[in-house]
Length: 67
Image (cartoon, rainbow, N blue to C red):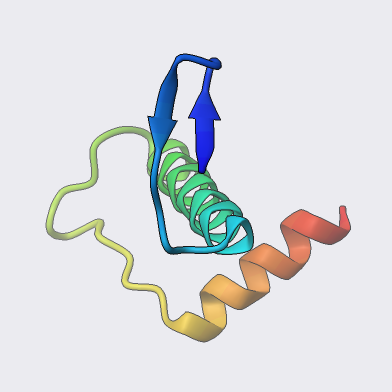
């Protein structure tokens, strides 16, 4: 059982590595959204929308982690 701030016990069947992986993927998703938002100059309209493939995402992650 994991304790949050020592007072709130949390029961889970998932291992800690699964929680860490989910947190990292969420963080990368948010960062990627902000990068695309800032690159487009604001809120993307339907004409400015960019649809990235999974290969684009892996390329982004590789570049972000290496540099």
